[in-house]
Length: 353
Ligand code: NAD
Image 1: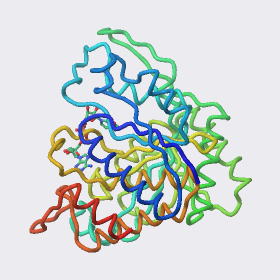
Image 2 (image 1 turned 30 degrees about the vertical axis):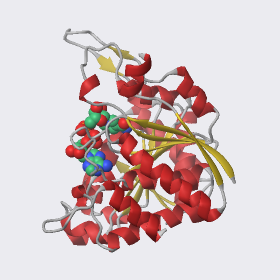
Image 3 (image 1 turned 90 degrees about the vertical axis):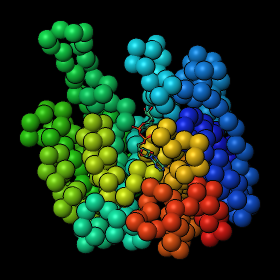
């Protein structure tokens, strides 16, 4: 197949991991007879330096012409002055909003080779394979707010309408159908009216997916269950804020931020794919970034935007094989284990592919 992929490397370790990911996708194209065209665009701090805008119109145009977007990370100390008129992170928020990417998918998986070094007991981490589906463009982060400057009162509003809940619930139920057919919906329906609407709507949408077992958890209980029975979850769907908090909590299950991919999707096949981690300025330029989160994001791009399941699985298996062979970047190397560089790890993944 022919596909155009917009590539936005961004700042810090962004270009280091994105460069490896486009090489990997080029190898996939050769191996499976596809034609991928990569078109680069500026975003974040680098875009501010060169154009004054963290999301230049030209970058939006590049993305509009593409089938999917592959992004590294944005931000860094150079642009972190909170009083500055533009922040690199605004480029990313604008991109998500511009394309109406309402469903944020974040898979969290533990690898047998890594559980020894994880912060939870190894037996709790057997078979952890969770897909978070977080609503990304509504809820309390986008509700009416009142800022009082330095005053004594301000407020934010959590609001949802039926259509917003329905569309993200549909994504979650469909994802569960392709996995182990279990969905856990997280809310705070005992206290919040918007969350009662959330629960009611999820129950209604469930009628179209009777093969999926539906469970509801209150968000406070969910934080505990994630640590005491992480292996029991399949897909978890949550609103914007609860999904944000829970998916970060769950990221410790995987051992390192560098392991985690994400996809932000809308109703058609278009999507934005990026690792969960930031620009990691502390290790930028040292060639030691873990490329796994970026590689798994590229695999998600193949799976969701291009519907190339075999090719996506091939990348995931090649990563498993590199880990099983003992290769570790510094962030996942245990005591006494030698760390390899980003390039060495990437080369091993390509060899296994
Ligand atoms: P971070 O994710 O960049 O780094 C946190 C820690 O994890 C650091 O010690 C870093 O070295 C390590 N780490 C992250 N990714 C890694 C990888 N692939 N391999 C090995 N180690 C890795 O978070 P931060 O330090 O809070 O933020 C740094 C900058 O990134 C800030 O400007 C922040 O705003 C930005 N940020 C951007 C995004 C994004 O682009 N989506 C997300 C989060 C933070």
